[in-house]
Amino acid sequence: MIRFDNVSKRYSEGHDALLGVNFELESGEMAFLTGHSGAGKSTLLKLIMLIERPTRGQVLIGGKNLARISASQIPYLRRQIGVVFQNHQLLFDRTVFDNVALPLQISGMPLKDQGKRVRAALDKVGLLHKEKENPMALSGGEQQRVGIARAVVNKPAILLADEPTGNLDPQLSAEIMQLFQDFQNVGVTVLIATHDISLIESMPCPLMELSHGRLIRSDMDALRSTSDE
Amino acid sequence: MNRRSREPESKSNRSAKSSGTKVSGAKTVESSGLKLFSAWWRHHRSSCSNSLLRLLESPLQSLLTWMVIAIAVALPAGLYLGLQNVQQLGQGWQDSAQMSAFLARGAKPRAIEKLQAKLTKDDGIAAIDIISPSKALAEFQQYSGLGDALTNLDENPLPTVLVIQPESAVNTPDALAALQTRIKANALVDNVQLDMGWLRRLHELLALGERIVFALGALLSLGVLLVIGNTLRLAIENRRDEIVVTKMVGGTNGFVRRPFLYTGLWYGIGGGLLAIILLLFVGLWLSNPVSNLVTLYESEHSLKGLGFESSFVLLLGSGLLGWLGAWLAVSRHLRGIEPS
Image (cartoon, rainbow over all chains, first blue to last red; front, side):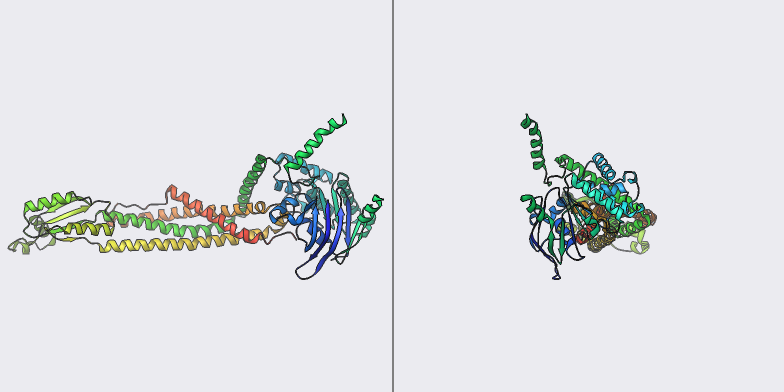
């Protein structure tokens, strides 16, 4: 579902953010991406979202080479990828419901269906009773869950998360992780960038570790070679 | 049995693949053309109404922008109206642009009759009035105050005069001059008098005025574009977070642009509406002195306002200006706002 072929990214200042990264995450897999800050985690996610384009190598999403996607097609790619941010990026000028409905409004879903989808997503993250509130009135954990509801309301094939538990306490973090696992269980491909080691160790998921732009550990390769045997 | 039960599933898979570009796993949305159109139409409607509501949420600020646009639109429109009024007034005066053809002294009555008959056939002439020397002398005696002195003259020094009223279609200086030459070509005619100096000057002044109005209109339209562009730049800056998030979850440039374009349209239409009201008040305020002045010139001209059609054109034009200003601002500033 997500495949990197020898991908390098050099920013215009000459800084190498990624160097020859190879990995493949198959449909329905869930993996962690870790590394020190500045190791290239965010850059890797940006390449999947086409916020950045690679300097070298190829990124394939669902078998589609992103190099062949023009600027005007980018929005349609992004509709198939749900993203959860550390600072959740909610809009405080509208209700929780409208925040979650935004991706559906963009894709032009009929209002009736929008209501059903939004409520299903809010129900999933346990915030159905807060749909009419302003996200500003919610706690940090609740805001993060609204962000997750927005990321999955479109039923994307891929779910990306950038430090989703960044400023949450361990118990809330565990709840959030459970949510991600639930989505994986229904077939969503999940990639979570985090440096929260304790969190990673509590989950039975493969791990990729970046250091100075290089992938120095990739459990997926190990998994594949064992399953091949 | 097993194979048959599997068939519909594989069929629906195939149709899902062909109907959309979605990566497998994403639920395929039935994207028939009609549905897409209705979604597009719905977003237009909501952008249209929401952007107006947004402007009304901060009424004072919006009113200020509207006033600036209204003044910029009303100024050239008002000048244009004034110009049109003067033009109409000028046409009224030209209708009374008579020519006086002085005939050779001692012209015989029969020759004069013949000339009159000939001139009456001219397309450029509406009416001819003959003032005989004796009648002219009597009038002159009556009005000049020289009555007694004139009775001492041995003979009547005045020639026969034909007062010629040109057709109303003959109203430009050139056409009148041509008519003058035609009349003068007759042997019996000594001289044709036509005061064209002021007519020429009026024409040139009106042509100059027209150019000034257009130049002013162009400059002030540019002003409106800049005002709306700058106002929208601020609006875009204020909604930067929303734009980033929208682009992040797959909003196209068109989707992001739409509300701002409608905001520009509303600025333009609101400004145009205020401009019309402004012109109406100025017109009412001026109508009395103008009609007094016009009466002094023995004309029945009354001040002409915008009228329904011109008001509509003005509204449309300022709305279009608003939309265009928004386009310029949005295409310049939205490109710079990308998720990072």
